[in-house]
Length: 179
Ligand code: IMP
Ligand code: MG
Image (tube, rainbow, N blue to C red; front, side, top):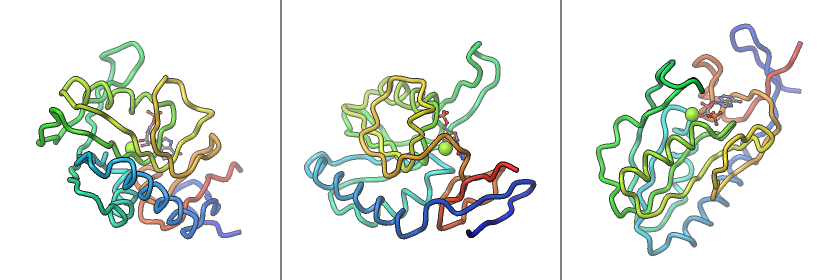
């Protein structure tokens, strides 16, 4: 079993690169079919989705644009904890068919905020393409249009996802090993 150490934690290989690339290609093919005439605006949510977006877009062959946003986090504005706002969205989404590209949907709280914000900004339609999803962790009623791979409720790193900033460069996905 291939393992690695990031800071104080040990991780074991769980999803190899070939499986990732196949799943990403399949998502791209579905988007190519579904949105062929929709002139979509892809919105990549940084930092985590950078690798997924890069590989996905290489398989996208329809008329489309891509832009990149970050989420600003605030503490204590709501009793529920973190409130996130989209920053860096310079393009108008008014009347656009938007596809949000995310690395992972865990509780769904982040995605719920993004969807509310884009709706508020006047997008015509909003779809979600998430590389990973943890179905067992979902706490919000949101529709995920494209999910490349579903995973159990364990902490993972690699392919854009990090542990305290480390591990984003890994080509494979690794799962934390509880010791
Ligand atoms: P949510 O708001 O609970 O859906 O969390 C989404 C965000 O949490 C993602 O965009 C990731 O940044 C982070 N996240 C959730 N699970 C993991 C994981 O297993 N590894 C790394 N980051 C994660
Ligand atoms: Mg993220």
